[in-house]
Length: 388
Image (cartoon, rainbow, N blue to C red; front, side, top):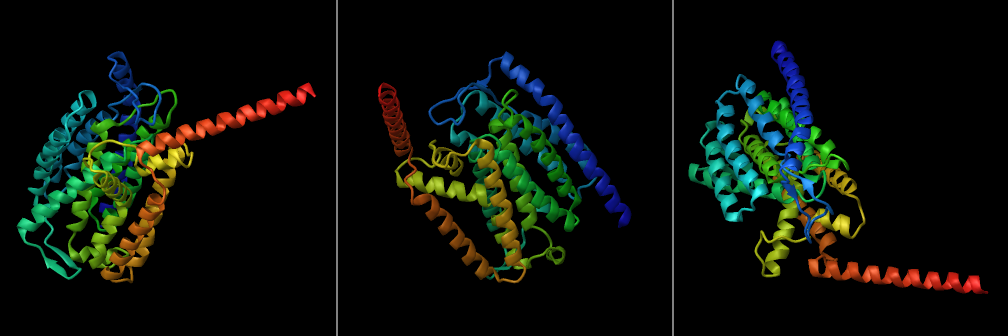
């Protein structure tokens, strides 16, 4: 066992550093090609950036993961590495095309379903029971496939939707992967811990460029679909862990589903909130706007992209730690009640202000008018004072 853990720690360092270096040194090459071919992301009315910016940063995630999976296959128990590759390839192709030529939401949805099928085919991800969560124990196969596919689709699209400002998707992804790395290391699921570390190495290398003012690049749908897919797979595996391994985790067995939701609180809450607003306004759930939580922090609270991303990422981490502490002694019913209260409070904080796009533009124009009037008053006062 000691030899196995030493081997894992050595591999963990190599995979993390290797992924970081591969991503760090190849992204400038991607930026060069994107700029040369003029495949830039053009800002529009909803964009949070003002100038044309290279996209396709997610390409680096794809080839880094594929390269890593070749070596990671010696750590899996059910040939999981082979089942990752088709899903990653499908989403890479679709994400790349969407970054170059915008695809319809239904085309992307069909591709996501196809990618998910490969994961659900592997017995390693089969959820046999919820171990008493809300009184649910045994889960029939048809329910597992239906709920599992829906859960993965939700996570992939929720993560894709938070990629709206510099750093946010990478920061939130890093927090989620750190949490899952810890869970899978403690439960001795070393293959998944190494997958987390590999992707985290890529995200951290990418983050430096995403925050950069001179070598900026976006991950695009190519990246967000890949990262969202990996996170959805990790969540499915977390819920499929054998009951015996939960003895090593600091929370009750029945509370695992709530812990999974708390880990994904940022993308899930933001998606639920935005979809509710759009449907209430009789618009499609995937219709674009600036009602996302990160837009509110920037447009109304005046935060920079980096500040908003770090605040949201810190909130995600603190929220999970709080729920893990609760889950160590509280029952699942109490945790569900706490989660619902948290959603209501967060929803109220953002709902009490009118954040529709039309009102946002109107308030911004009004603020500019007020500022202009103030400037004129000050200028007149200064001129009058000079005359006197």
